Amino acid sequence: MDKQALYNIIEENAGIITALSDKIWDFAELSMEEYQSAEYYCKLLGQEGFTVQRQLCDIPTAFSGSFGSGSPRIGILGEFDALSGLSQVPGSAQRQCGVEGGNGQGCGHNLLGAASFGAALAIKKAMEAGQLHGTVIFYGCPGEEGCAGKTFMARDGMFRDLDAALTWHPGDTNEIKVGASAACIQVEYTFHGTAAHAANDPFNGRSALDAVELMHVGVQFLREHMPPNSSIHYSITDGGGVSPNVVQSGAKTIFMVRGETVRKAKALLQRVDNIAKGAALMTDTTFTFRQIDGTASTLGNQVLEQVMYDNLCQTPIPTYTQQEREFAHALHATYPPELPGDLVKVNPTVRAFVQRETDGGKRDINDFILPYYPSTAYSPGSTDVGDVSWLTPTAQFTTATWVSASPGHSWQNVSIGRTSIAHKGMLQAAKVLAGTAADLMENPALLAKARAEFQEAAAEGYDCPIGPELIPAPQNSGSM
Ligand SMILES: [Zn+2]
Ligand SMILES: [Zn+2]
Picture 1 (cartoon, rainbow, N blue to C red):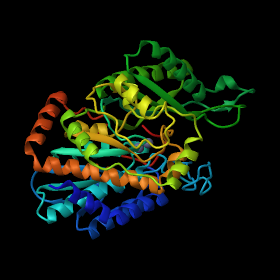
Picture 2: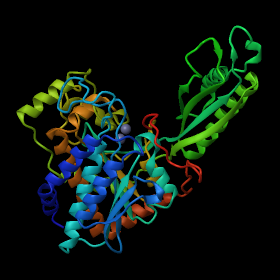
Picture 3: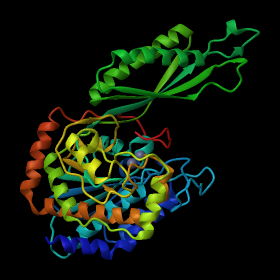
Picture 4: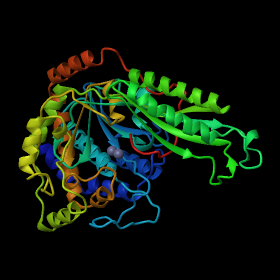
């Protein structure tokens, strides 16, 4: 279909999409507590004529809005959760807290969900006009930051029936996301000991804090002997108390264990578990273990990526006013300049291109498109989009909603996330998503090719990183 007609639908609905994004920015709700955000989305989807399903997989803030029938079935993924401690006055080029102790959209998920919604809306309207046929489904995926909501949805049967899943993420560049990301399993160890007066009768005490410390020492010695592309991070979330004159009877530590695949992450976790047993033996304590969440590695799909890239190139790049450029410049000056983008890390040709385009990272807004090079390069972070990518062909991209090389999960991203600069990047993303979805709906051969690539890449099958009993819980130990 005529892409311009799709873009026009998005422009005509820019007010609704922008208001949605700003509303989610205002709510700034943490993982699995996004009640107001989910309610706003469900109401809007209903008003716009989508069939709404609330509380998907028994998760209170997971939902979907679908339209149409039959195949192809194209899923568009949206996120909307915020991060704690990042409240910020919007449009300010200085760190200025908005609400004391409040949350902020430091990862731009207000924009993420709103652009995905905008794309689904455009596809729906094109279907109503008889221009496209099939089913479009917007997925409201909660808790990306704190507990990998998509993994729970994937475990419980979502996404398998799709012909393709499309998503994007706010960023500082216009580029296709390529390569693989790590599988990650997040677990908590709680050690149980015996309290005692630290001076009078320490011999009667058994220190849970000692166990945590010994476990950490053991894990540090493990690092030399881990497989390549593995990593382990930790945080002591409960040291037992603030009084040194007590033998601490309870202490908690959280670990994130990453590997190239879920199988490798699980094998490494087994060794961490052995270290916990050793620490408990050494200190005469016991421990209980709780999994918090997990994500699978990401499988790229080069057939989808190429379609997405073609659409990224067809979509007009936003232009910026003098005032927008001045704000971007002031925000850019709050951290040292660096080369932007993901591809620069793995592809020397792209690196040289970006070096030239940005004058070594000095450009404030990256209003150009990075070339696309298919790659299976491994990146050490994790995302719950990975779980979707093991169930259906999946592709992702970024648009420049942020200032160049803006730090992740930062006040700078919160600040810009409710400005016209971010809105422009968001609407551009909606157009890329809608254009890609339209191409896939019109060309069954493309979907068949994407499926063939997926079947080969995912031949070993989806190894879900979380157990069958695990329930997603509100908690915010940080992003994947
Ligand atoms: Zn994030
Ligand atoms: Zn994010």
